[in-house]
Image (cartoon, rainbow, N blue to C red; front, side):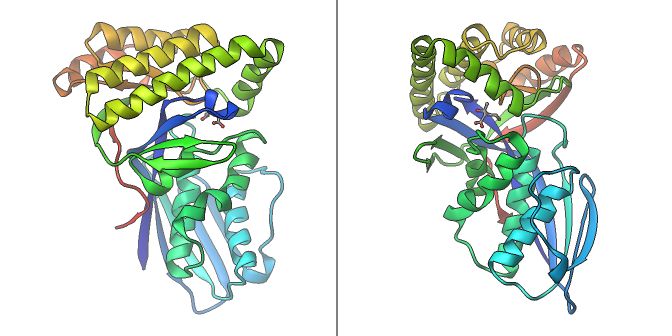
Length: 321
Ligand code: MEV
């Protein structure tokens, strides 16, 4: 039996503007999805997952799914596509477990599932180079998040560390593995990327020039952020994160009072910086902080009735265990 894992991830900089061809930086987090895989003697594909459910089908019964009605459809679609594309004839058992809360909206639980299952299949029936994982997985990501999803989170779940990513044309640059403690705060407010992306698009359509300026300001933060990671300058990195939050909140209108409150409290308690991460309007916020402030900041944030996850960013991903 082989066990693989893939990280969830967060947007350190550049969510939303990345949809308009600008750079973003995503980072792999210490919360992961794990996949145990073993070949079978027969032609059954038997998959079980704590969060997604179970299915057992013969290889001949595998088929693509165009619209996901239940959670397991994502995994069924991925496995069917892999089997059909590469004409695999041997059955498998796969067991999926995860540290990532499945409805966190902002930690990319589905991206981690896709990457860990692909990595597991690819370990047993090696067919795809890692640099092609994005191209293979983006159709599934789009079926979950809507047609315009950039899917750039896939790079951090595949390669780990920090990734400078861009669409149109798609490109990535791995910025290494500087492991830093981070708090991820789940507001518990559900917000779908398939709604926040069209929300920004409506604004952009009405006034492209003003939005272009904001996207360019965010792009500058991304450039500075890349340098701050390289220089391990956490004070700078934190300030840039907060600046990015302010642009997302005040200019693009994708924050939420609870996200703003999290950022405010984190900064009042001497965090380096804080911001919403992902589509916004709910979902999660992230806080970069000096280690000695961890308890103080966590206690204050927990009073907001939010779930606070202590983890790291910049970790390795898609590794065998
Ligand atoms: C959502 O996690 C991130 C966005 O930039 C959308 C996308 O990149 O597809 C808002």
